[in-house]
Length: 249
Image (cartoon, rainbow, N blue to C red; front, side):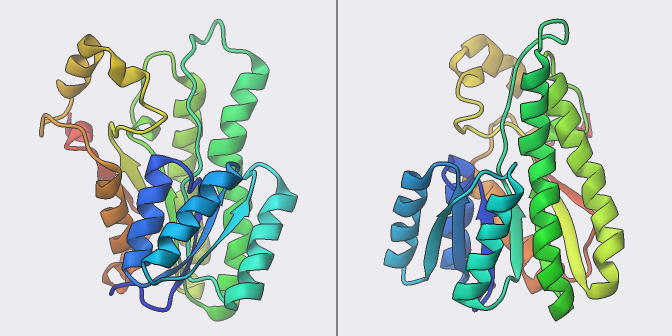
């Protein structure tokens, strides 16, 4: 098991991607802090992890609130005495032309997708610095590197995460903390459900993917396990595209 005896905080654990991450990390031996704004689903996922023979706790958390972030980190340390891995997975999407997007909608996307990464990375890195080791993984998007129609706030937030990942990799490297990102392509999740309902749109999206298929949450979880394990100890500041080849065009 690649993550045996490690403790991992996974934000946005209630969604399909977060659940896949939490379950795969648990299968690899990690103890999991399941946190999401959806407390009920967090509890269910924690139960599934416990049934796998691993250990998990669930904590309701709004990643945009400093007090919630501090609470998650504090409870993790109290329960497990350590934090080895942080996966910043929580995120939101919004489809709206730039001429119609409201300021509050823009702020909401930036707060969840970018500010949430900042708040959790800031709090967790304090503990990793003390131990002089750790892995931070930011679940990003191909939208952080290319444009998507009517997705200005989302693309801006993910572009910010790409460069924040690079900056943190430099800043935290003296303390042996690896910071990397994963850029999923089109993955069937709650966020992409509406987009994939249209057969025409599905066909258009597949035309951008050399492998001619959509990914799965499990594909992202496998990549995250690699970046969280010792296999990636000489990799930092990298944005790993798990996109079927989308970014090769």
